[in-house]
Image (cartoon, rainbow, N blue to C red):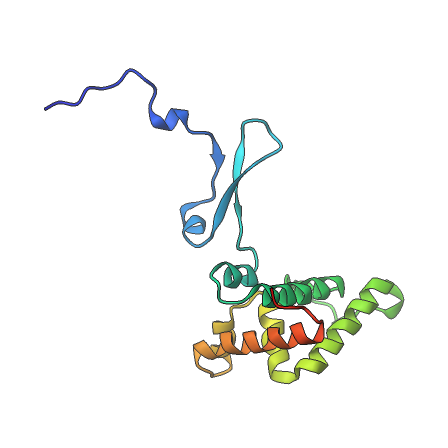
Length: 170
């Protein structure tokens, strides 16, 4: 039995136009289609920008743990940190105290208080995951620990930050 070809336009012609990333990024990310400023155009927005986003979307951490990790990340950015490292051929330079604004100084103090509260090992894990955007599994493997240990240490550190910053469970 032969199928009749319809005279109506194909389904592909009726679909709205989206700016989609390449297939590799679509496979490894969670995307949401949203409107753009241009009429009739949409784009796919990656919902997993940070490792914390990935852990939260997969229900590996709670909302309060996510909030604590996000606060650590924003405090680190405000303190002058950056996950992009550019190598310079000059001597290593540190920012002068005169160049820092009051917000930067308060953010650095907040970071120092948090790391003093966490201790060395929890602090290293929190910094690697929240600030440097490294997976907890990779952090654990680099320290010769079992890969599952990294996520447990991350949860413990985020719970400690929730206690420090009085972030209530949701």
